Image: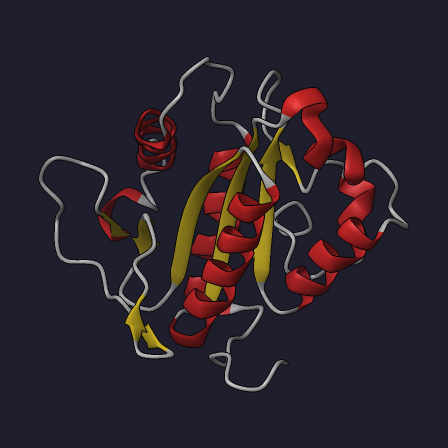
Amino acid sequence: MLFGLRPAARRGIHFELALRATHQIKHGNFMIKADDEKTYENILVASLSQSHKLRPNLITQVSQEPVQKIFRPIVFGFEHAPDITIGNDGTAIELKLINSGGDLRSCLGQALCYRVAYRFTVIVLIDRTENRVFVESLRSKDSNEAKLLRGMCDELIESCISNGKATTLPSVQPELVEGCPAHGLTGSP
């Protein structure tokens, strides 16, 4: 485990809820054409809310009337607020439209900051780059990008990626995270 990340076990209720979340996200319909993250975030909340196990534990800043305030960890003197959490310290979920390398770097940094305070982090990345450069970089399981996401998975940071045209692809291809015990598809939701 990287120094400073919150300890977490790959068992128990928090892990089960994180698995459920990745399962719900995988089945979310992100095949829309929208220019703003808010639209995708609303789809994400609706998808997660369909689970009777997740619904009572969701805390969101996306909806008009959040159930309660999201815990914002302070890292390097700045507050970091995920889009959605499952419980106060269970799972942080962040959705990001990837239009450039800067967007991707920002989201990966946010994921690490959330893991300081939350047991698990799920990042939902929507590739909006020309020619879907981000998704294409993950096609080979031996690419540096695929290795990076697998390494993040080892640290309990799960990636759900959409190419912006088709359904959500958990970590692009299941074989990219084969053997990763944190991956939502290796446990039963």
